[in-house]
Image (cartoon, rainbow, N blue to C red; front, side, top):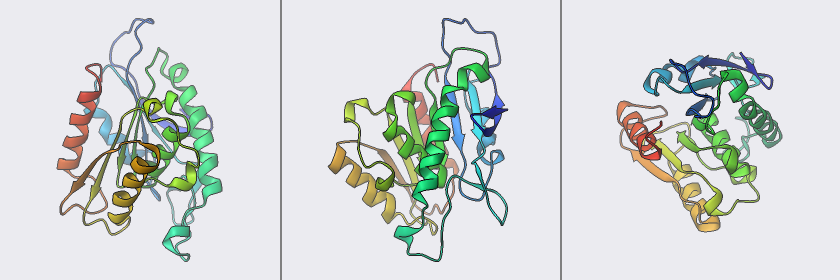
Length: 223
């Protein structure tokens, strides 16, 4: 399946659905150097009566895998990210979100974005640029990149934001989400439901995933 130029793996709802009853939907965004297969294993944990899309990032990497934007590891960490490419990925992602109902063949609620690492960074930037298109964001092992959201929406426009990060993360140090989520609240009044996990590195363990599922259950009984 292709959504606005992005290849995607798709798992549709298991049963028939009334056209008047929109179903929950989820969009999974993988991390740097991975692909759409990485998070698709999560699909079995979502309601059978939902639509799940796992997207492939647009940029190929020389070492294999895909990226939402390039990273120059030779530069200081604060200058790693190619913001122009990230902006293009946000635009492409927003177009893909508009195409979800037609691709699923049924009415859908706005999607919940679930991102890991670079996918989490992109998810947070996207929801802060277009909050009405998204039902919520779960950000694993990411942070808020303020350069991708120079203008913040009003807090009451922003859907629920949830984040998890390992205290032993050696790829994205925990100081980054600690600092940026606090700054997001102070600058824009936007709260991230942020969870730190002791002993966890750059990944998702059972504790983090169980906390994520509890958050999903709190969003709505339809999820």
